[in-house]
Length: 188
Image 1 (cartoon, one colour):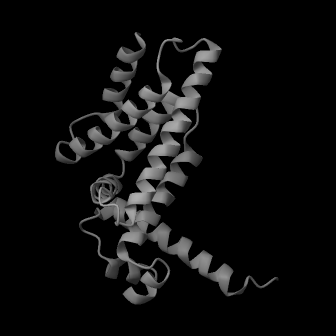
Image 2 (image 1 turned 135 degrees about the horizontal axis):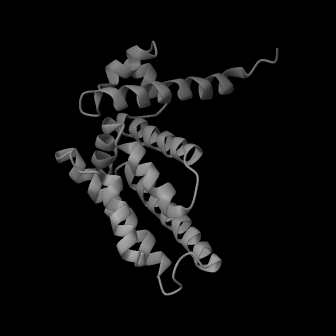
């Protein structure tokens, strides 16, 4: 067996922490989860846990990145359907919606650790969604007169707004609202 060395062990431990944090926050919620609980779940002190991330905020940004990776790996299909499926999946983990919404608001401060993450997430997400919509236009499955950049920006904003509202009123079917908006937008 080849030894991975301290760097490999550190990466592995970081992944264990992120997996535990994803589970705990998804089950208990962001506001009901403390760093002490996360540290205990992986057998570390708070200081030991934060050693891997630098700060509580950076830990939570890493959790959001991990969730993004999970969504990309799990969801396939045409752009609108895949986008809506991510929102549908999010409804199953309210604690992660709570974390995302909190970090999104905090990211308005350019000095907050979530600021760059959110900017990059929106830039890459809207670029990817816009690209997929242009491919649909090329295939003839989306009207050519739709501004794909504007559509991508609007649907990200709509999804985020629905998630924030859903935290207040969970009777809202976010995926159904997005599906309705999509059909109206493309004229179905």
